[in-house]
Length: 127
Ligand code: THU
Image 1: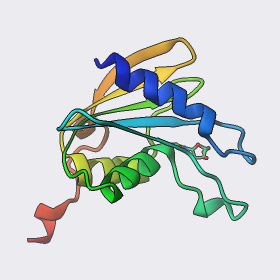
Image 2 (image 1 turned 90 degrees about the horizontal axis):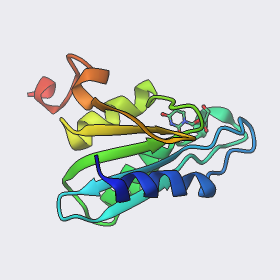
Image 3 (image 1 turned 135 degrees about the vertical axis):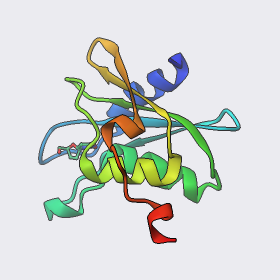
């Protein structure tokens, strides 16, 4: 458990752009070098174009030059779990990492990326 990472994910909920669902999500990823990069969900009026907080954080980190990640935190009001699309992207970019799930009371539980996406399709499947 990483307190700063969790605090960042919770804080990122304030940046959420969720006028349609009103469901604010914050995420934060910890790089191997020790930096923390945050993200929030950004919704579109064409609902399907919405980007989840986890993917915002990871895509932001990748575009900033980070390549290796060791943990992720996700914060919602009720401890919601990463969606299926995010589970795939988390696995692709992070492989096995702990994911800290948070709700309105703070840290709730830890899950492993392999646990929430067992038997994943990935780069090894393409070789
Ligand atoms: N959402 C996330 O940001 N992450 C998830 O893993 C699940 C869903 C967002 C997308 C949308 O803005 C809102 O939560 C309701 O689905």
